[in-house]
Length: 135
Image (cartoon, rainbow, N blue to C red; front, side, top):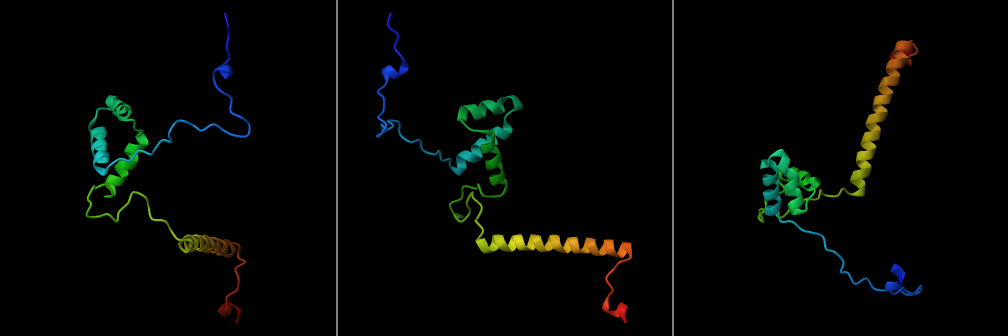
């Protein structure tokens, strides 16, 4: 009886060069808007015990259904070629818009902190004298 190891069956790649992978690179699946609408409708109309069976049959995840339902409710999943400007991905903000939003949030926080500090000083009776109070 001869025992062979798995390494004896497969040719060993050299340290300098690698063997090419014979398997083709998988491609991303693309679903049409009509298919998405059909799957969301079928999933919503299925009884609770059969929803998982639908997902397994189609090779989908519940996150697909959630995302497609949100897109349908937002009107982005109409399937109309008349409105090609709408896409599934939200538009990207420019660096200036991101910085502007950040500065607005920071300004709002600082204004809120200043209001709280002034109220605390007024309660303690150590308020900063105003110009008309000093005279």
